[in-house]
Image 1 (cartoon, rainbow, N blue to C red):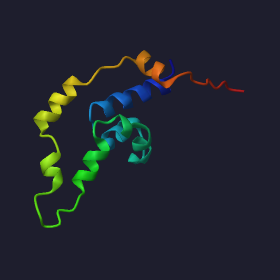
Image 2: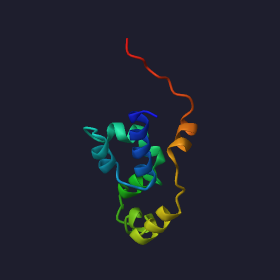
Image 3: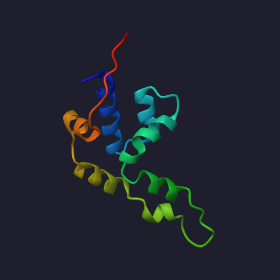
Image 4: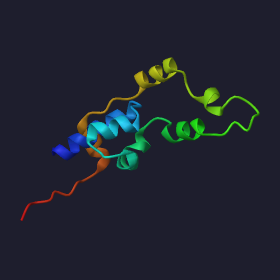
Length: 104
């Protein structure tokens, strides 16, 4: 197991636990969240839906959709407790075979 695989596993676990992309980017040493979102956003629970809902206009009709649809902190914590846990070898199986690069 390489350092890169352990680092990716760490980032994956953070994303699956709902840690904000900015915090994951900081942990992994990324300059901004673009690389983090590219590789980890799909693992975050409701990341895309939450982002869209949080930025929807109200059109003066009702409360913002985000206030209605986003879970409370308590509900989010309950969901996080129910998430499956993965061991590094589980993630390696999901990733499939990896190519090792040998120095010249």
